[in-house]
Amino acid sequence: MRIRIVGAGAMGRGIAQWAASAGHTVELCDVRTEAVTEAVDFVRSMLGRAVAKGRMSAGAAAAALERLVPLDDPWAPGPDVELVVEAVREDLDTKAEVFGKLEQVLPASTVFATNTSSLSVTRIAASLGDPTRLAGLHFFNPVPLMRIVEVVPGAATRPEIPPALTELVESCGHRAVTVADTPGFLVNHAGRGLVTEALALLEESVAGPADIDRIARDVLGLRMGPFELMDLTGLDVTAAVIDSIWQGFRYEDRLRPSYLTPNRVTAGLHGRKTGQGWFPYGSEAPAGAAEPPVTGEAGRPVFVVGDDDGGLRDALAASGAAVETGGQASAGALVLVPVWGTTVAAAVSSLGLPAGRTFGVDPLPGAGRRRVLAVTPAADPAAARDARAVLARAADGGEPYAVSVVRDTAGSVAQRLLASVVSVATSIAERALATPADIDLAVTTGLGYPTGPLAWGDRVGAARMLALQRALHSTTGDPRHRPTRWLTERAQLGLALTDPGTAPGACVDL
Image 1: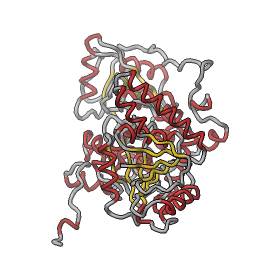
Image 2: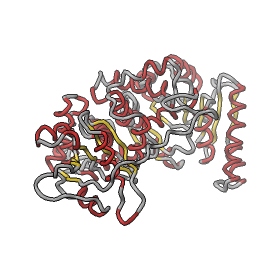
Image 3: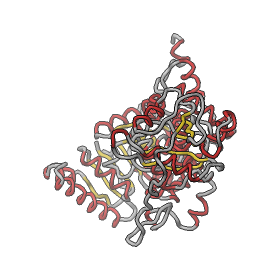
């Protein structure tokens, strides 16, 4: 196939490298001819690096460079061009102008694709004489390494174009997911669950950025915490995406932005690229703050309340903790409550527990060696230090647990992050913006989550996830936590969250 790529910036040159390496002839052009020269040099260096690392033979790299054709004029006639991929700046008028000019010089059979990450594909196509020829083809940076592409049909896109683009993408070694033309498409939309809830936790002073990141990594198994991720992406970019998706979905509560971000963006606290974000960066930046040492008395007796499956009680006993049995705690015992969507304060009130020495423990099984201790405003600090020491103990003299101390909140940190991730994903499925399989594929490939959000919810259990979200909603009164219909129905019917279910159309003979 002969492909013309308009725009030789970071995305355009990445797409060019990807397509040329896969055997396609690629015309690379830009209104700035020097940008094309720089892009070709960059692709040459990347292919050379691939050869040096043994990922590509020297012959294959040379052949790919032969297929990369620098083009002086983006609007040159191209009777053999089968596909155009536009990768210019993210501006509707600019993209419309590019396609308008291309429409004048390329055959009517040439398919147009825009690499937009946030603009409406339908609105871009509407500027054309023939809007049926255009679709979205959204790559992620760096293109050769991010092996996922969103195929986005506009409202007028010809039905044969999305399957053809999917076939092209997958024949070149990437995975393709078909996504509705909605704000954020799929990957950026699904990613809002993690960062918006992390910002909400920070707003409520539940924990600081470093502790939230540690819990996200060590309990949920994420490769990067949400604040690390925002610093890597750039808070200016993240905040703009959060706002645009929230506005695009008509101020949907579960996508609500935080008041924390606008001032930080204005102050230039964008993250790595500015040297300061949620954390400092650069050669002069201090090392990350170490966690405080465990100083409490690990031998203090503990009494566990509400541990239905006995998991926490058994784990503590195996570590050598002095776990009490019976109907109530002794006068000096620490009281630990595995909260699920509720607060420690509510347990203290409803069960008559001693406020000064009652603490919450997140019952989610951790991906790493970390436990989370929740303290109320009434907690005795000395008792809290002892509870932290008890939770740090490991069975059989193994590596001690790290223990994060956070403010009491409904569901604690990891539960709220997970509930939000699953909630946003089920909302996407509920609206039929993408199939369940494509949602999980896009999130694991595009965001690097350890498992897809729907499969993650299934691992916990749809009924238990529903109980969590109902508890969060009723405890806080915040509509951001309300359960989706997708989750509610599947919990009630015994279906998996990954199961697309039976659609009405399947029940009618056509």
